[in-house]
Length: 63
Image 1 (cartoon, rainbow, N blue to C red):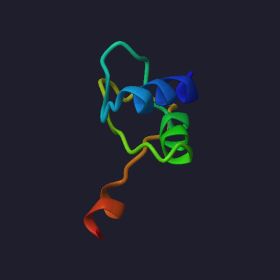
Image 2: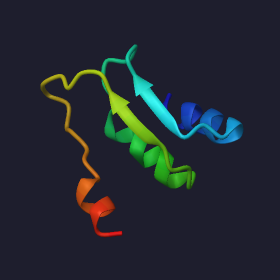
Image 3: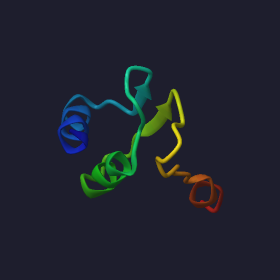
Image 4: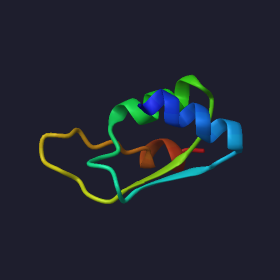
């Protein structure tokens, strides 16, 4: 699902993803975003236990 969504977002020029209706914004979304060279801001609504959290704060602050 992640690669399909990122392809659609790239096609329409979307720059962010709001995870309000999703269980979680998981690592496969950032992997898909990176592989398609489609930088997207991702905002999960929840952080369920058992799902690895992703943070790019360190990368972004070094730019």
